[in-house]
Structure formats: C-alpha cells, structure tokens
Image (cartoon, rainbow, N blue to C red):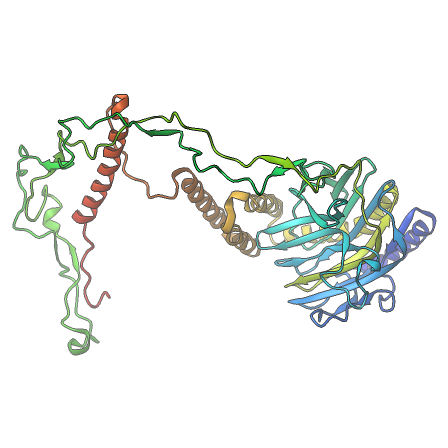
Length: 534
C-alpha cells in the first residue's frame, strides 16, 4: 500500500513537471492521456475498424495511456492538430511510448503522421488509405520485425506519391516493458532513429543506400522499347565444330564389367538366407486370419551371417571397365561470335529530378491505424517538438521511471525463478535470431523461421532445438544455392585429362555417379514387412 501511494505521488509530481515543460518549451504537440481521450481523439466510424479503444492505466502504474483493448481487430483513431506542422525547416522530433503488455506476435504499434485533409480524408473516415507524410513505430508479424520509418514523397515530375522505406531498420524489443521510440529529422537531411534514447539507426534521405526506393530516381533507365537483335550471340563458349570423335571411342562400352578374377570368399554361407523369422515373435491374440490374412513372423538378420563373410547366393562383383569412355561430345572453344550478355540501352529517366532536401508534406493530424492479434498495446506521451532537449526531458521524466520500475520487477521475478542472467543471454540470442530471419536469401523460409523463433520465446526450453533447426534450414538453402538444388552424387576420382578430353571426362564421372546410385538401390532392397507391420 505504501509503495502504491509513493508511486502515485511520483506520477503526480511527474505530471506537474510535464505540464510545466509543455507550457514553457518548444513542444509543438504533446499528449499524455492524463485525461480521457473522448472528444479530443476521434474514433474511425469505418465498419472494418471494430476494435475498441480505452483510457487505461499502464499495468503496475498510476499513469494512463491509450489502450488497444481487443484481439484480432482493426483499430483506428485520429487526433487533429491545431495547426499543421511544417517539416521542411529546422529539426523536428517525433516521439512516443508503447508498452506491449501482452507481447506482440503479429500486429503493428506505429503512428501515422497525416497530411492535411485537403489531401482527401476525414477524421471519421480515417482508414488505411488516408494519406500520410510519415509512418513510424514497431511492426512485427511473420518475417517482419522492425521499427518502421516510411515517408511518402511527391515526385515533382510525375506527380506520384511514392513510399520510401528505411533500409535495415532496428528490430522491435521482445519484452513487455514500456519503450520509447524517437525519430529526429535533421536539417542536414539526416534522420536518427532511437529506441529508449539510444541511437539505433542513422540515415540520409538523399542516399540511395538508406531508403528503398531511393528518393532521387536514377538519371537513366533501360529503354523499354529496345529489343535484343536476333543475331545477338550470348554464348561465351561453343562446341568445337572441327572436332571429331576418335575412331577408337566406343560409346557402347559399359561403365562396369564382371570381375572375372574375383573368387568366392572362404566361409561364404551360400545356403543360408540373409534374413530369418524372428524366433521370439508371437502371433497376436487378436489376429484374425480371415480379416488380417495369414500371419507371418517379422524378419530379423540371420545371426549365422554375422561371423561369416556373407550369406545367400554369391555373385561375381562388378569392376570399372577400363574401356569405358561414355558418350563423346566435342570440347568447348571460345565463341568467336560472342557479344556478351545483352542489355537494353539506357535513356534519360523522364521522372528524374534533383533535390537539396526532401519536400515533406506538413503534418496535420496523428493517426493510429493498426491490425493486431494481441490486445494490451498501450500508447502514451506522444510528442512533436523542434527541440531535442525537450524530447530528452520528457523521456527522462515519463518513460525512464516507468521503465526502471518494470525492469526491476522483471529482474526480481527472474531471480526468484532462478533465471537471473539467463534472460539476458536469451534476449541477446533472440535478437540475433530475428536478424538472421530477415536475411534476404531465406525467401519463402522466412515466415517459418520466424514462427520457430516466436515459439521458442514462449518456450525457452526448446531454444537450442530451434537454433539447430534454423541452422539446418540455412545450411540446406546454401547447399541449393551452391549446387543448384540437385542431389549430391558420390565423389568420383577422375584422372587428369587433356584439354580436348575434359568434357568427356566430366560426362563419364557424372554417369558413373548415377550408375553407382542405381546399383546401391538395387542391391539394398527394402526389408519385407508383414501384414501386421503394415
């Protein structure tokens, strides 16, 4: 009870400090949700946005926030600013807090900074299509795990608004604590993304390396009307047209022949079968010969064969045919008509333009339009300011005390469960795993890997197994990339050949590998199963 009263006093004091800061600082907009949001924030009346918003306390605190209260729903709410915020001059800081009280398996927790309503939207009709200037904040689902920073920019040549996504954004913290997200737009065309006051990403709006697609289009583009000439030869090598098959080349000679010098080993038990009925097998009591057929005892390896060199009919083994050369093919030579890989000619890009800085549209409202499978997402302390010190002060006075309380509580719970230290290691491991899951070459496997990681987060005891599974998947993908996805053949040692025999030698090696594979399958038939086994 005393702790609760102390917390209440602390938050009342913090509220007073924030009020003073807001009244005397360069804050352009600040929402602490100390008061109910009804009448100030407008809930979308679109039918698909059925999720209910609530004015709710953050768990364990006396501090209020805007709560996503229902699972598996679309939520949309908007706050119109008194006057639009111009983003073209000076520094602008966008900052807000989010607490994922029930975690975030699949959903968004980001803000949309909307353009003026002249762009074609209304507060009550706010939806996914409402035009925005910037979208910023956490988003996590499947292969997606990132703190988005997206801005829409109008191409002055085409008039088209294009979404530009930050490349390699930071990942979303995987705990259930309150986190503060900050985006600082600088007048030198830089944007700095911070999580909990720590810089996680710095990018330049004009750099093609930092945003996809690049803000400034390329000067030239491939000519869409250019076509490859019919006589264009892209083959770097061709079969030598003057080469002829040697007269002594026998394409019909088999790869293997019987080893006439081989002799049956002494002690070979030719009259003994390789398998015998299991003497300990007993016909089941519920076996019905009419329904199940005649019962047969399962087979086991013949114990008499264990000490003998072999059992059953002895067959003369095969050996490599010294006369085998395989199918002949002409060696490759440099193609005299080779012109290289054809590419269409470059022409000036009609949409190309130059800028000294982005031409951002002003911010007229702040909207939250998300779909999520989790409830318990709490937004708080939404700030727009042109002063970095103001943002820092609010972080220190609003976010930091809450985070410290939540962190201390989490550590105490971990210590009482004997998990002190382990959680930190697990967090580091999962941060690495999420980065691995976002590797581009994983392609369609990303979603499955992300599901495994999220499952391991809920069940830490399977983490090692998940890591092994991910390693196997990545190893398999790398093998496919290296070997074209074909089944690996047995290694075949091939003696060095003369240059004009190289291709024939490679052909023989490949054919030999396939023949040996077929031979193994024929010599190792599947063991017979009884009807009962089936």
